[in-house]
Image 1 (cartoon, rainbow, N blue to C red):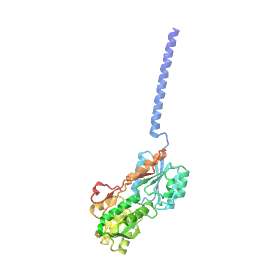
Image 2: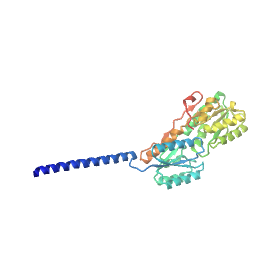
Image 3: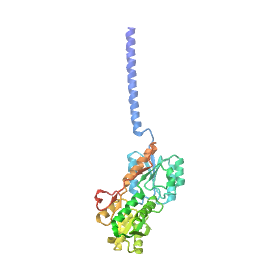
Image 4: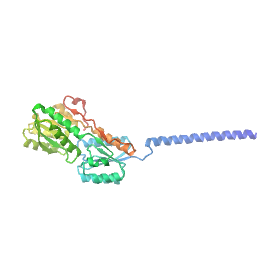
Length: 328
């Protein structure tokens, strides 16, 4: 009898132990699933320091970045420097004070943020340089660059201008974006260098349009008044190019001028379709915005980044404009 009782007790204890182990395993699995979902970390907070949200391109770029952050469960704090370099430096300090995990930086000025970037590096916070590249002297302070090659875009724009004017060539003018930015510096210099190879084309005037359509229209009016024989206008983006077209229409010269932009905007593509604008060079705000967030999250999670995540860019004319859809 005693032996039988002992056997029963051992069986019960063994059964209870299995049940307990089974419950423990189930609880651990549930915890692991939750940890896998959240990767065992707090919610990532990203700081988005934009040069100027008044830009027709940068506003949708920031919007796509915010959507990608939300998609990935990250919090995003957006700052607009309104094209003021000192204001952007103050905003970076603000983001540091809010203890963001990474900063996506679209710089007002390519060279002026060294003190700010030194502080960010000291805090061991990764910086994703978006859209407008910081100067070479600041490259050690950013984790990667997400954006197009501004010289490549400008060279393609020069090719478009040469094709538009043909062998006859002629006098042209250029309307630049905000001074000091990488985009403005290289979309000017690379264009000048490439167009200089065409001996029949001469740049006779340059004005600043500040990435703004109304300012570009005023700049074009002044250039047209000073240079009545121009046959081409190159603008650093499509938005300013539309302003230049409006100025030329008002001066009754639009049909004598070839217009070249950069960006592939909705209005730019429509103007190409209508024959008002000869061509543009694409730059996708959806890709740039989303990619900057993806790389920021990678950096926070310790993933090794490449030095450059480069935009796909293409020339657009009336022959292939139907292939493209504007996003800004």
